[in-house]
Length: 447
Picture: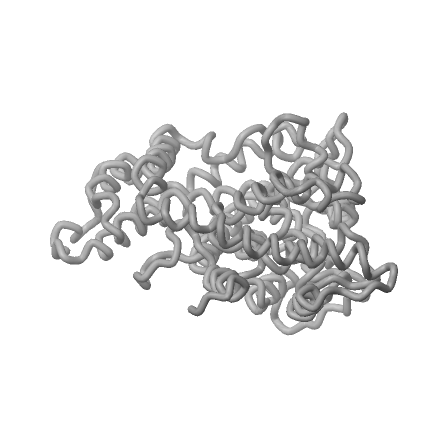
């Protein structure tokens, strides 16, 4: 049993009452890109931490610049893979190889769209709050849905954003094409598919399980033979993952050099084997005061062989990927020098970047900020759930909080799980600065 490219690349679009396509020179997949980039959720990524919190240096990446760069690398990977697939007679006859590039680029653009403020520290702070909160908060929520809160996952929130929240609320979201939704899904399963007692990521909350099932069935993704509601990845999801890894491990390390956390010579030593141990032309003539120019040349010199090798591995492993048997990721299967370079940049980041004092101090503060926000909003939601169905009057504070949250606030027509998910939508959608500002306002502090 294997997946079929004809189904995997269907031009169909997700969502109800989707209008017929207009021939305006854009494919369905280019429309996906446009819908994502014009969304408010994508725009807010400019105010969310990538690696370094609240950077004062304009050259440091935010989630927005990271996502745009991942999209560029993904487009190259996808287009080259599309050409190779076409050459081997594997693409549908009417399918352009560049459409593969457009699908991967759109999925890359959205890959971090569900991440909360403050990067991974914000994600961990949400999980910790729910894991330590009074159990009475969660009474009435069935066991299978509790994990959506206790192990809050930015990937699952991203799927919720693009299929449910943006544009057409509860009616298809962005209404993207099925292939883009498939390529986006790095973890096409829910928290229930993770063995108890083990850590693991997932790509869908229980609230969007119906959407995930529809995407999986339409694309013909292979379901796990023993685990319900767990599917293998869409093949193009591996290219999205590779694009993210390349940028996260190579391009983002530039920030550490910019901030003086690591030396340029360290990056040179790591990348030399990738581009043949020979520095780019005119590299030595660049003044010592221009490390950014040197970094740009190093990046450009290293990027081409890495991308070529990833596409080569994708084609070599294609049968296993289509059969749902491929394990690991594409970069782990690349040539030794490339795999080693990625591993060394990861090790350098862990040892020199993630332990940097200012970053650590900021991340500790994240827990206080998120605690104030979550405690305030969930206390109000809990009171609403207890009083509203019986027609009891809410406290003045709770009523003001419900009013403040507008469409994300508690509604009489929603159950407790849905009300709580709305709060997560609101908090995870905040930018770093807005989360800090609202937290200070709640505490009665002036900023």
